[in-house]
Structure formats: C-alpha cells, structure tokens
Length: 396
Image (cartoon, rainbow, N blue to C red; front, side, top):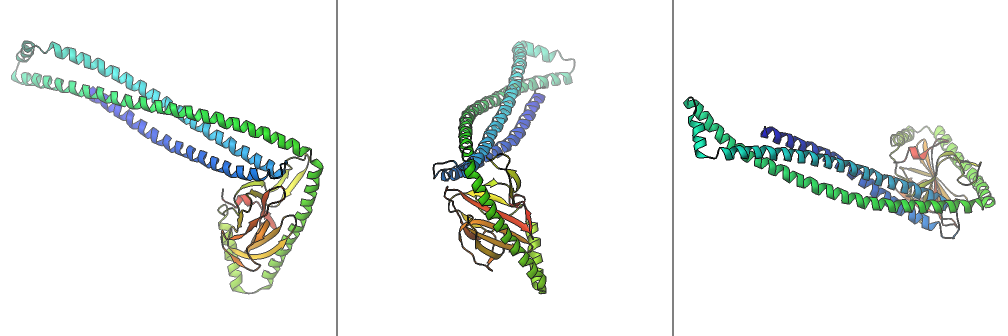
C-alpha cells in the first residue's frame, strides 16, 4: 500500500516536471517577444523624435505614432499572455499542493494506525504469545518475518511522509515566487496601458492638426504623384532598355548568367534582408490616405521610415543599372538581378556607380531626410515591368 503511494507521488512529480518544462519554453518565448517589442519601441521612439524637429504635425509623425501604438498593443498582449501563463502555473501549483496535502494526511493517518498497533504489540509477553501460538514452526517463522516487515514498513512510511512534506515545501515556495512575479507583471501592464492611452491621445491630436492642413496636404500629394510618375517612367524605360539589350545579345554565357541570377532571386523569396532598418510607413498597392478622406493612394512598392542618415543596402547581388536625381526623392538607384529589378529612391548620397556589380547587404547610399525631419526610403521590387509587393519578398 505504502509502496503504491510512493509510486503515485513520484508519477505526479514526473508529470509536473514535464508540464513545467513545456510551460517554461512558452514563458521563454513570451519573454523574448516582450524584449523584441521593447527594442522596436526604442527604434520607433528615435524615429518619432526626429519627426518633431519642426514642432509641427506631419504625416511622418502620424506614421511613426501609428507604428508605435501597434507595437505598444503587441507589448501589452505579451504581458497578458505571460499573466495567463502564470495563472495556469499557479492553478497547477494549487492543485498539486492540495493533492500532496491529501496524501500527507492519509500517510499520517496510516502511520498513526501502525504506531498504535506497534505500541500494543510492544509488550514482550504479547509478542511471545503471538509467536508461540503458531500452529507450526513454519507459521512461527512467517509471523516473525511479518513482525520484521511491519517494522520496516513503519520506517518506509516515515520516509514517505518526509518526502511529501519536502515536496509540499517546494511547491509552496514556487507558488509564492509566481505570485510575486505576477504582481510585478500586473504593475508593468498597468504602466504600459497608461502609455498606450497617452499615445492614442497624441495620435488624435496629430490627426486633428493634419486635418487643418488639408490644403497643404493635397498640394504635397499632387507634387508627390507627379514626381512618382517621373520615377515610374524612368524605371520602366530602364527596364525596357535592359530587356531589349538582352534580346539583342546572343552571348550564351551572359544569358546563362542572367537566368541563373533570376532563378536565385526567386529562390530567396521571403528571405531577403531589409534595405534599411525602420518600419513600413506605406504599404504596397491601393490604400486610403491616412488623413484625407476619399483619397486613394497607389504605391508600387513600400515606403520604409527610418532614422536620419541611415545606410541603405542592396538586398541581393546584381548590377547597378541607373542612378539619377528626381526631386523631391533625391537620388534613385536601380539594380538589376536578371529579370528582377530593385529600386531604391530617397537617397541623400550614393556610394555606387552605374555598371558596378554589388553584393547582398552592400551599402549603396544614405537615406535622405526632408525638411520635416522625416527619413523615408521608397523601395520597389519588379519582375520586368510588373511591380511586386516587397513585403512578400523581404524577411518577416
């Protein structure tokens, strides 16, 4: 009976150990996620500070605030997930403590019964009478072995009680530690919720200020559309020239290299490094203007808002096919990768030359900051003249 009790407790401990290991992995993942979000917040905060250089509301500031709020929401969600995990762990601890306490009470009751029986049999005359009342010598030996085994079982019972008490003490300490950890997380979550509320207030203020600048925003939008039309025409002209040149050439070696480069580019889809750090301030395709109602924006790439003087890098090996200045985007660089082309517009300085071979992650220039302190790269990926969504090709 007592051996079975020990096996049950041991099996329960084993189950708890496996459960704790599985939860610990989840907790480690959540803590890593929280640290990553905190790091992203630091980066976006720096970008946000740079948009305040002119002390006026700008689209760049709104974009940075939107991103900051998005990360803040993820951070709060990670806190909530950690708290939910701690609640599950505390519930598990409570269940285990109850089970141990129940086992301990039963063990003590059984031991008390054994001790009472042992005290009754402690009298020498009683023991001798029990032994010599045997019907045979074999029965006498069996009774003697029983008495010895009974004494051994009492010792085992004492050890079992001590083991359960020790495990109970461990579980009590663990639950106290988890409750303390939960209190810390609750305080941090409350602080982050307060931060989120402040950010949303600031976001509303910026939106209202920008709505008052509707005329200026519409003028800026028209100028941007004209500049983008010039950029897109240049891109399409360069790509067509490249395709015509490839069609004219009969060099098999060059055709083989071009095909291999195109295939390699395709194989790296969703694995390319980002050309610059920061966040996507405007996605690919058609989307609503962040402030002007009823205005649809068409973007053939993505806009990546980053820090001042940030270095821009090539996402893949290739050849620089075009460099030009297109106001207000500053310098633009087009790199060919076989049938594929990457476009980097919004550079203050350019570190490469037309016809130069570049490698993956090679610095090709420095991002331009406009008068409002907004540093933004316009990045495109094209297959021939077809614009592709860069976020499907860049690393997540």
